[in-house]
Amino acid sequence: MTMTITGYSNTTNQALKAWVEEVTRMCQPARVHWCDGSRAEHDRLCEEMVSHGAFTRLNPQLRPGCFLARSHASDVARVEDRTFICSKRPEDAGATNNWADPDEMRARLKGLFQGSMRGRTLYVIPFSMGPLGSPVAKIGIEITDSPYVVVNMGIMTRMGKPVLDALDSGSFIPCLHSVGAPLEPGQPDDYWPCEPDKDKKYIVHFPEEPSIWSYGSGYGGNALLGKKCLALRIASVLARREGWMAEHMLILALTSPKGKKYYIAAAFPSACGKTNLAMMQPTLPGWTVRCLGDDIAWIRIGADGHLYAVNPEYGFFGVAPGTSDKSNPHAMATITRNSIFTNVALTPEGDVWWEDIGKPPPPQMIDWEGNEWTPGCGRPAAHPNARFTAPAAQCPVIDPDWEKPEGVPISAFLFGGRRPSTIPLVNEAFSWEHGVFLGSAAGSETTSAALGKAGVLRRDPFAMLPFCGYQMGDYFAHWISMAQRTDRSKLPRIFFVNWFRKNKDGKWLWPGYGENSRVLKWICERIDGSGRATATPIGNLPAPDALDLSGMSMNPEDLRQLLAVDVPGWKNEVEDIDRNYAKLNHHLPPALKQQLDDLRRRLESA
Ligand code: O2Y
Ligand code: MN
Image (spheres, rainbow, N blue to C red):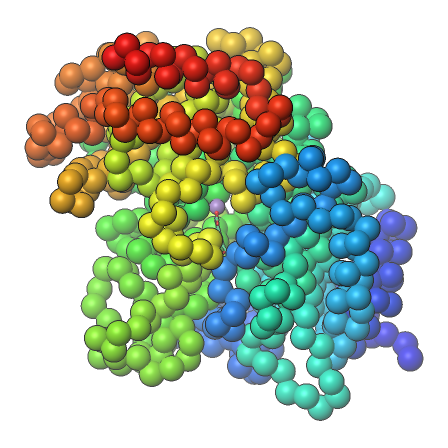
């Protein structure tokens, strides 16, 4: 039987053709479509999904070009315990990753993928992470049987004909995805096909090839393989090999009232408000923030020795609950059109709603599972990990340089997390090595984005715990090594921030959101050499009155707590960091052991 092939497949890339043919033989789809990335293709796929119930078109008067998808209840978030790094040696994946033998895993996956696309369309998605033609961009080809993945990849990456043309005969990273739900003749399709058995979902990385195989899930980071799989797990391996950095960081530009522009990259664990900070509306008069990216930064040393960051993505896959005109007005403006909403609630007028959207729910809605929902019924209307997918170009505060092929020069790296106690509002590292130490000790109270228990402190070094594609100790050493690769004076300054400190009654000590601009202002002043600081055992903290608190009312006791050194708390912190370091064995860089010993000694004499 001849296979129907549609779309734009005009390539002479023999490796690509051979791989598509091999996958087609293995997965046995009913037809093959090479995505061209056009608006017409996007519209047609959305329409097809509406016609079989996978998508609901939102009210075009309220949200033009927008759709709602509801996922299967078993498929609502990234699955870290089903995510594998299959390096040849277990040691190269390290204790923080799930390792599996590459040959055994490949054999298992081939069994699962055999016939997995029966009755479905196999889509070939050429995509670029990074601006097309940029020296830092990497081309991937995702093969998937999910039209939901195609339209989301069309928003999240540069995708289609221009990428295939740019690939020419060059190399690409193969990314194979199947929802794992073949259709028998006459079998009606599900609204969200997937493999419902969690233990049969596989998100697998072969870093040495490199390649990615994902089976059984259609959701987010499990299925949109350009994002966490390629741009972080695989890219982190390539970055170490090639002398650059792939980081879980937002990129923002902050401009002072005098017109000086500072680029800042910040790494916070999932669900710590990276998107909110990236698009922040400063409350300090005269300061502006522009967004260059909300999740991933690829960073290289430029010809002038400074570190330059590029956002490899093209859109935002933001968490919806909690997003409001108060928390993130610019995200709210970004998602007014051409956006896909997954697992949010549907209002009777055909608009979306979620918890903490900033307006009361209507008396009746359809919840994320498709059931009738009324206020007070005891269930959330939107899933806590409900998402919007929206083009970055629609963000009203997108920076004009966000697509600059060489990126933007970074003046400061920020690390942070949700830390209700111990960790001060802001703390400047004494040196690059001290900053790497602070990054290595980052952690956060867990929330729902990663499946697991909420409210537990999880160490998440550099916010990369779920995303580092190799041995964490070697990753720390790579960070340390950046100081040998360029002039130290050109390296960004490093700060640790904590917007989430609480008092003994469990109340937030810091208002957060736009008020965080006050902390960013101090950071800029430190970069310029004008900001006043007090050296403490844990780092440089803002000197009394150094934070600009003009125009806000701040209880002096709250401020004292926010900027105090909690010596007993830090002593516990040191022991906990030590326990985590112990897992890295001989891979822990001596420079970090030294930093830990120095901190312990400073706290003893405090
Ligand atoms: O659950 C998912 O699949 C999405 S997780 C996610 C999405 C966008 C940005 N960051 C994250 C994350 O977990 O860090
Ligand atoms: Mn993230």
